[in-house]
Length: 254
Image (cartoon, rainbow, N blue to C red; front, side):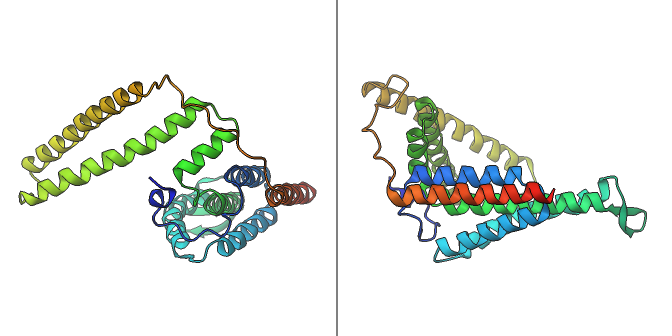
């Protein structure tokens, strides 16, 4: 299974020259900087930088816009309620409800930080795919069992999804039409039960196959990864310098 098949909706990646572990480190540095930054100007600067990198790193921004639309749908509800539930100096009144300045600032802080982190993760991690992501984590020193668990979890999620699609298609072939009645609920209960049974059966077969290949709780060690190349080191240095600059200016403005 190739990485391209693992992320079929990913746009062409212009950062592919960077080593996967370097991209993970850059994303971690940027997210830590976003967490440490508390002022609105600092977070706005981080968001502008993340948006610029996201737009220049991909040739097709439509997948990015679609993902942001899903996130903003969740954020709008929370951020609309927060100003009216945070005590402080009232600035806007709607009937008996009053929005506080502290609540508005907190809502803006959350919105800027969340969007900046999402853009960073999308730009540097989103196009890696699960296999390259897990491999890069192993190269950075994550426990081998955690890396193996991540790979197996992703693989089995896809298998369970495939089983669900096949069973749902079989139900439609038998003229099943969901309605608000007991037959529909029984059919869905049987569907869930069959998915669980088939998933357990597939897991047992995979476990036996791995044991036949001498699997003992960890994947066999691979060849040591090559050292980071010059442009990887330059990108890491630039990320560190930019993060230090933003956090330092944030401390001065505080």
